[in-house]
Length: 345
Picture 1: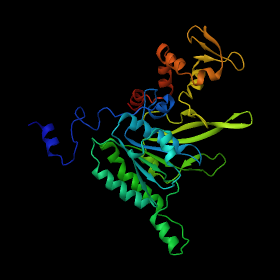
Picture 2 (picture 1 turned 60 degrees about the horizontal axis):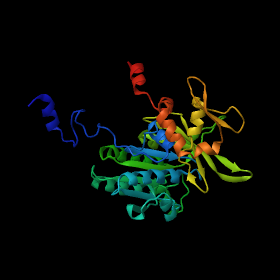
Picture 3 (picture 1 turned 30 degrees about the horizontal axis):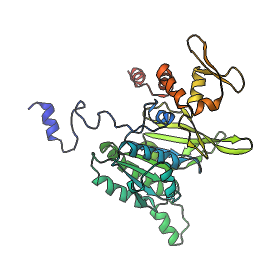
């Protein structure tokens, strides 16, 4: 037996192997959503998607954080018909109708109410210990933003008004413990969190809960929004997914997504913005758009209204097939690992 085989056989750790035979370093399982620009936010291309590991969805109240997490869960269950959603609920603001809106079978969701960080930590570690790598499980936590620590609750019951210095430590402990299990057992996890404003002349949004969530996350989205008005009425919102951290997408990228009251997430939203920026579509006259050949500048399809483009599946599928638009998106958003290696060397 050669040295390599002896070392592998001598290891007490499961999944020890050479990189070429490793189950952990093999191709990551990827779950694509039905929304191309969400796939971009997750993986840097329209063919990207959710991978095992921790995805943090952070933002103020009413920023569709729960909606995005349910989209990820619905996409996971669509790919894995026998999949299960472990749903840890601390806010109890997600009625069954929300799950049904996203096409999630309620029998596929295990609902676990939680009241403090330690309760979440103990239960999730017990579940992770029993889950096998072959099991198809996605974990949702909604949310850790207002989740108290056990000490904070005990102090309140004892009539103490002292500041709680344990919550950030407990959250850091939670994420430190679960992170390796997510990769080892191929489990995607989406956690809803809050943000707060940094103190200063130019305050920026900071993800709550201390540094633990940032260190452990594979993806951190900070969500912003603008009103989408129909006359004086609000028809929905234009959301911006700000990529605060990612292993695949260029950090500080901004991904536009539109959500309306009557139609939910606009599947093709964000693509028009990127196509305009890339010169695939131009706006020669106010209120009108035109499809152009990027190389020659020749107009191929003039006099298009925005509403004829935004929700037009046939139009975007043709763009993906007949132009290099997907490559442009990937170049714009996807992290180039080769350039990182060159810089380091």
